Length: 193
Ligand code: SF4
Image (cartoon, rainbow, N blue to C red; front, side, top):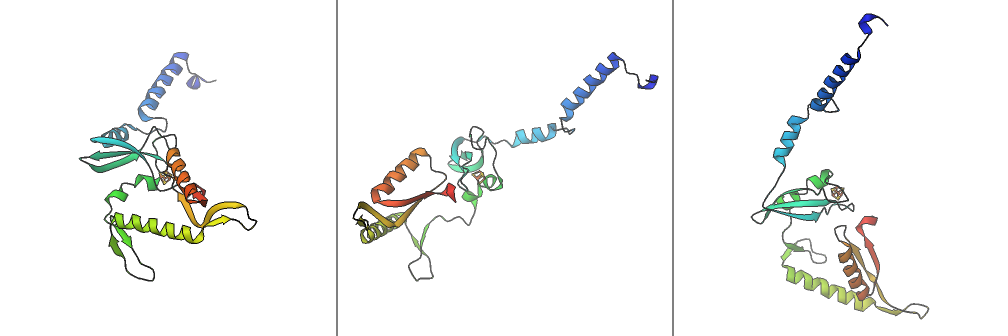
């Protein structure tokens, strides 16, 4: 090996220390990440109140931290304690605050009567009574006490129930109990579509 390529132990260690210091400053990718980290720290939101929730867009069910100020939702971010997403959110979940702030958000019950082409504004009391009446009517009209073989079934096949990804275990249990009590046999969940 020529003299110019020969490297002493002291020079090698000195170079290694210098390289390590550079990596520490620039990061493993060779970029100086500190300005971005400082910006991220300044953006991190901490408002008056934090509540946990679940993203309602898809069946993954990513955990959210919802920040509110004076009773109004001001920011939503991924929940780092959620085993589903560990703080990350996809593009849809990252924009979920718009569900609250969008001027296109529906805030009233809209009802369109059969064969009508116009929506009518209704209150929740009217809507819930209407749903209950329709469920009872359909259940009564389609109730089966026995099947074709004479076996007791006590069911209706005219109503189906569909669960949401934001339901937790306890809510799913209660919903299933309620559905079984109505005699429903067709139950499914958003996660399967
Ligand atoms: S953040 Fe994205 S992946 Fe997670 S539940 Fe919402 S839509 Fe699904």
